[in-house]
Image (cartoon, rainbow, N blue to C red):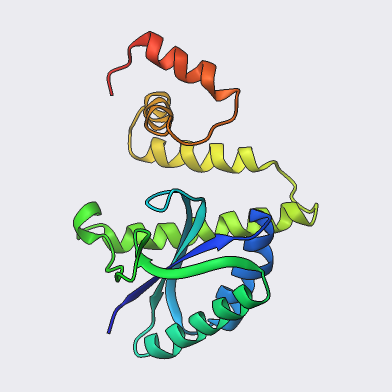
Length: 193
């Protein structure tokens, strides 16, 4: 029995609506009581198409029931054209099983890492939900800035350098035209990454 399930969801429309209308009810209603942790990320690789990568860590022994409910929910959403399609996978590779990333992050901090991802996904979903209802008191950017600043501060790292490294790594992704001059400045400064 697998501890985790990963599904990759190809949106059919508005990304925020996918989160607010579908993922929120999937996680907090349909699968409530079946998962221990969950998280999502927006990805492009390896399928060369923007998609939502949703991972769920099941409570034992509910994995079979949880997988069945998840599959039925997404199949129904696809038939009603709420999503374009979906498939189970591992890092976006279809029909493989996601086993977690303890080897990548270190077994000593893996549990804390995926719990942080759950917390981040819950916070991001709440921010997007409140913003879509025009109830968000502060702008999304403030929440990103504070979360990034506080964690970088806790690790005793340079926030400026870390942000520049991240910007440099993601230059191949579709970007806002305002970002191009920043990436050119990073190259011009010849920052060692």
